[in-house]
Length: 346
Ligand code: KG4
Ligand code: ZN
Image (cartoon, rainbow, N blue to C red; front, side, top):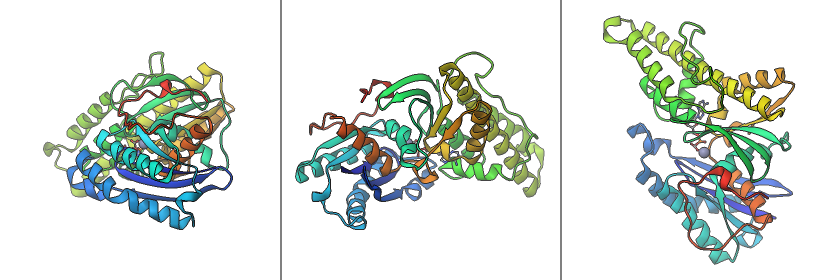
């Protein structure tokens, strides 16, 4: 079976064709970074308009690259939510219209299920059950996964998502949108241990997260150490920014690692999956490799390009849902708010 996947939930247009015997046959990603950079964040209306421009040309490109025609497909999967409603509507309407025109089933996919299953696209795919840490720009969740659709939410962020905290702190450090990868790069130049920021909600039981206080602590530190009264040379200011970036990243990484360890112990599981944009963070990957090894376990993650939004994860998740007989009726659906644990089990 072979399916076309369409991802348009936020600021990336991702298109892919996945075949359950041949794997990913073609994929394309167009990032809207340049569109939103001047505004310091995603402008929803601009995102929708850009998806309108890019989706069809990218679909043509992946079909050509895979040397396929629509007749060679068994379905069209599209991200139905969660995400920006206008952006979702573009993928939904194009996906459903193509499915109608091509006489194929249209498969609505949950964006976070796509992220969660992205490690299945790798050679070293995890077996069920496992604990998944989903860390993106909009979500921070720990989930016990017993099978596709068998999701028990163990904990989530009560305020900002981890990626959002990265992006907001990066902005305070003068870095361009999207700040996560830029902050991580800056942190490489930082001196470990010069500053220490809190590890929120780790001193009490539970698996929820809170990152907005950490961002505020970083903001206070930036003002204290680099404010006008500090009279720093350009070089000193640059180094102080890098040291703060390093302290911030360490605080997020430690906090996530402490909760992952707790979740694995609570569930008595050894396999940990990390997915979503922040799982591309090298420091987080290294830390979680050590954490799971100490527990006699293993960590699984997608290749970096499939950590952030992409069409391949949507095609993969869509194919699993299609095979399981999901509802493919053509009624128009875009679901900006959609709890992961409300999905039916396969
Ligand atoms: O999954 P994703 O592409 O989109 C959403 O579904 O939100 O995640 C994007 C988030 C952004 O906040 C971005 O700054 C963050 O992932 N991110 C990173 C890194 N790469 C992407 N954060 C920290 N380190 C990175 N290397
Ligand atoms: Zn995402």
